[in-house]
Length: 581
Image 1 (tube, rainbow, N blue to C red):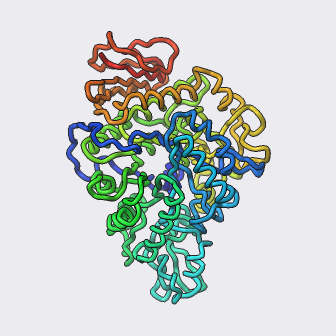
Image 2: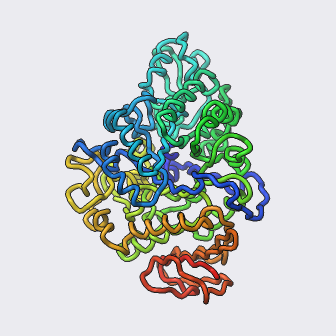
């Protein structure tokens, strides 16, 4: 979801962040024997995520909108990406930046009209770009007509669209809420003397997927958008839709590993198979789930083609590694290698390290100091574009945009951040530590306006932006980088072109090299006689690497430095791609 309470808040609240352990669920590592025999457009695509509220404002109200996106479609096309994943634009009171939907068949007024949507979709398709939309159906807004009817009476035909617990039964067993100021997922409603369930904010009541009418409503919503011509869905927080509606007591401390209790509850696979039969099978589309369950087995059950469920999923193991004090490169390699091994022969995965639920890529996994920002940004982009799987890339990361690091809590707009701030005040938490951690991890760092140029407000809006623009926009912006052949932006364009020209980077066998090297991530990709070597220095110091490969006759395809490298001694944050002879 609006990605489960980012690590900073989780850690400060004493809760483990949502991590799907690579070691949970024993899976024998298979030989990586993937071939290009089962080609799909969504496997070869580069997915570019557009956060509409912060992308481009067309009317001066300080909020990005669909006409703003339309005005920048040529820019998106120039990136060499194939798919746009668009965060929710449906009608919403905007409690959680659009992830609280009040009408699934209309457009939020802040973003424009359905006519604007149709124009945008046509513009994308005219440029060969597909559109994937966020589908948020674990919950709706409490302002959706379904919920208004549901809470109006215990006998309402919509009552069972949501999870209610009548108060005369006593207080229901504890359920942890990710966004609630008290972390209580049961909200008492005096109108019918009952509690309703909300895993996220109080304004996001959970839908009852046991009700077949709810499932039919969701199927019809999907068909509505697919019939308009969109190309797929990203299934937000979908691993949580099924619940044990007896709501048994969980053991003390369950919230520290809540995914074990909340994720992939039976009969979730029946629900997904039903969606596939009624909807997905009738369209040429892609589907991706947020989250991959508790184990490799869970993930395979979601995405293996013969199960007729989803096309791909993405796990959170790697994205949660980054901490203010740093992270282990060896652990990063271990995570990606284990997931690749588990899916080498069957299934498909997403590759990502950043999105709207994270702080900025270069600030978390790279080094955003002036000396190393560009180099480390390019290195991270190289990694994402050369791994096996479908890469998801967040808008602005192609510029090396950085965390804004607000000092004042009032500058933050994120609901769980503000609620957790109040919670920490209530329990006497260390507020200085809390604020410092937000500077590294808060997802608002990744939601500041896109930096288009060096004019006022980075060219994002002629008005007052809904959230402050990062002050470094005069140095980091698309207009300046477009003119600079060595910029992060133009390097990213080279990467997407290289990926398209070399299907070995899509389907090729992945083999890790020098796996215990604490600074360098080295691996090969191999397909049908073609073999590439990728070397990535994740550190700010020169680093040696031992690949055991003779590269004397190798051809350098791309390097993030302007001069040639010594393959055994990589410069700080150096990235190089070789074609081996």
